[in-house]
Amino acid sequence: ADMFNHSSEPNVEITVDKQVNFRVNTIADVPPGTPLTISLGDPTNPTPLFAQYGFLYNDCKTIFCKAIHLEEEIKDLGY
Image 1 (cartoon, rainbow, N blue to C red):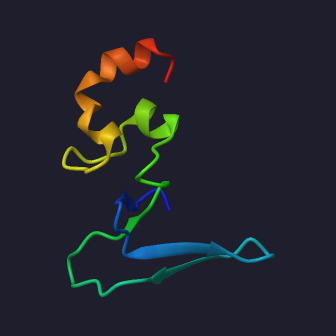
Image 2: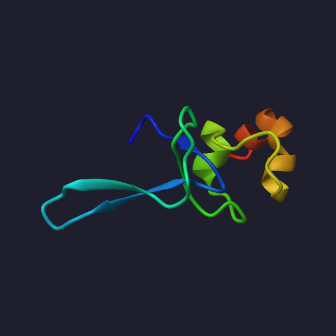
């Protein structure tokens, strides 16, 4: 799953069964050549993981995304 990109509108989801088998299913039509994307969390309430590693796109519509240019200040806050 480390090869999937993040999106606030993912086109695949990952499930895990009791035997720890992973299954990836599309949840939207995916044209050939389109990157497969998953959601790394709730885009309306980003976690420190987003803040620390910058997994959000610059055109993201959430408040956090609009502050992504404040990366140094975010680090100073401990994220």
